[in-house]
Length: 170
Image (tube, rainbow, N blue to C red; front, side):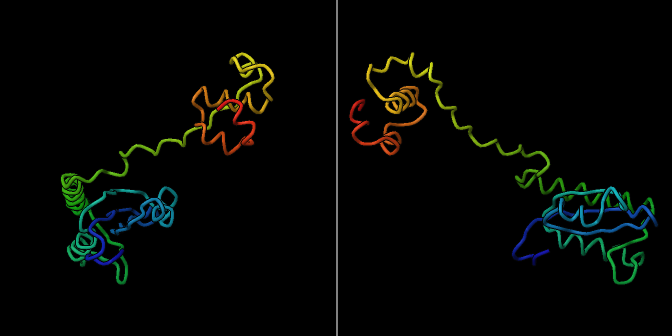
């Protein structure tokens, strides 16, 4: 995690090791990536995950609070049910403060819209029935059709059609 002066928020998480029941309290800026690294769902179980302000300070606070239950040189703790109730209350309060500050939870943000689709080129029947003058080349007729239907502007057609052919329908 970056220093407190450069990052004001992050993700605070609590997971449980399925094998031994130990709990890990940690922070990250990228929960999906960290989740894969910790093998959540395979060897560990997600207990609480919340986006918070001052993630580093909250992590330090919880580590100090449970220092007597900490495995040496790790972020793993032997937490009992009372400890878990306390940790849950800290997570809920911190998440609420984060949202109250005008932040949106990343879980509720809508996905990005798909890129706009390019219009399909006109069929020969559409071009023939569009009322183009007799004697126009297929290229002129197609260009006139796309301009008339609003699929492109005349400047785009000018770039794609020879100047002499463009003059015929300009």
